[in-house]
Image (cartoon, rainbow, N blue to C red; front, side, top):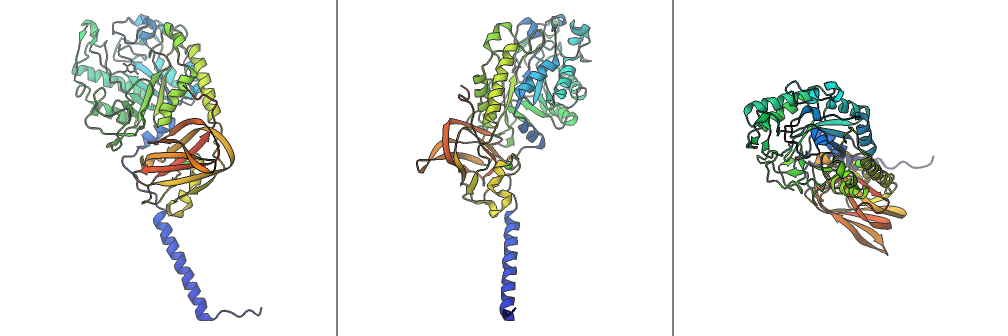
Length: 498
Ligand code: FUL
Ligand code: CA
């Protein structure tokens, strides 16, 4: 009550000073709350949707399943196609159990036989004994995928060893008509897979000859791709060179280290490119991330002689870490047998593979960690390291524009044991990080236990069992201030693959 009020002029000075500080803070925040400018090429919406899938499957199924071939010549009688107990729900159910987010069906392979009753050819299921010619594999499998909450995609081989017009302009019209059928009659299609293979010889309506096409011009890809854009704008197109998703350069399921999402698109076409597909190209002109396609068996189609050569859970895990774990998507082929179902050997292998993945990623051991970062963009909570643990790919830890190397320490409170590290970059901001290293706190000092280059959509690093109470992520090189979206430490059953 007796407190003497401060003299008026002094009071005013304090108020003015406080207001000035508040305004300058606001200014500072307004400047630094801005997200960083994206670096280099960035993914489109459709590519982002595809990146999120990470793991889906291929279904190679056609006359080859019954003739025991990998490439049908094109002279197979339609009567050859006769699965004894086709069950689309079994196929989709196995894929779902394995953790796949979608399936891509070989609607027409190189032999030209169509798994749907195309209006444009007699060489299809409609002339097969299966379901008295009333069946439609594309319809059944697309619907089964939807029942399982999975997406569906189509493979339509550009090379057609059956069609008499193959090599002539008329065939392009035929091919495009078929593409339209697949993109209008079977609901949402997440991807169209364009194969670059072209072996030359074939039946070609009885000509039985070698036909050479110039794959740079024959398919007029620009206009063929436009059909997909018009009819299914959110579908990603796969080929050696994209335009949305590229081949990884081998059929073993192994992405390179590094594996950049960018390549130079300089006139390359499916089956004809000089780009480094396996590693990508760091300063490439376009965002064309890699898909790793690989079969669970030696062949793409089912062969009884390969029943005992199904990839083991350890081999599948190894593929997973070399594909999904290097920022690519994994497209694992599971070919139905002559019943039209996935063989039990494949199911057993997939089950165990899934069990190990689920056990590994059940719990992020970094949850609850306290972070200390060498730099936080504008010291703002919007860009704070907590964003690394929220399971949201669009929130991220980021540094000030001029800070391209940075450290982040995770204090885990007590020692934890892990053998997998999981990292993601914020993709809409481009691929920013060139190199990183990770240290553990051991005997009173930091000791590096793993390192890597490209991150992109996801980077998984398998390590020895590490037991520590503190982990440090060091971004050692970046083209622009790093924006890391997620961080995880996981303990998987050992061994984690081959
Ligand atoms: C290759 C084809 O020739 C194989 O038969 C298989 O379809 C594979 C996925 O692509 O280019
Ligand atoms: Ca996040």
